[in-house]
Length: 92
Image (cartoon, rainbow, N blue to C red; front, side, top):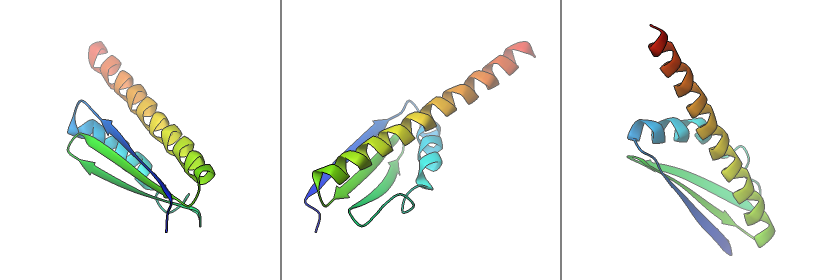
């Protein structure tokens, strides 16, 4: 049974943005889990929730670092994509 857990919640300005971020990182669920930590991901409208259960504090810290990084990359990628779309529409 897990002795350490954390819940990360990311609230976005739109459901579409939350869906994009959630879908971008969802493929990692189960892929990066190990015998010391497990992660679940849920999206409810504009809220993305990542729940981490870990056997020890070191595994929890490692999982937190990983998921913060994954979410950050998904957000920055979405921003870059939006910037390209906006620039494209302005030049039309």
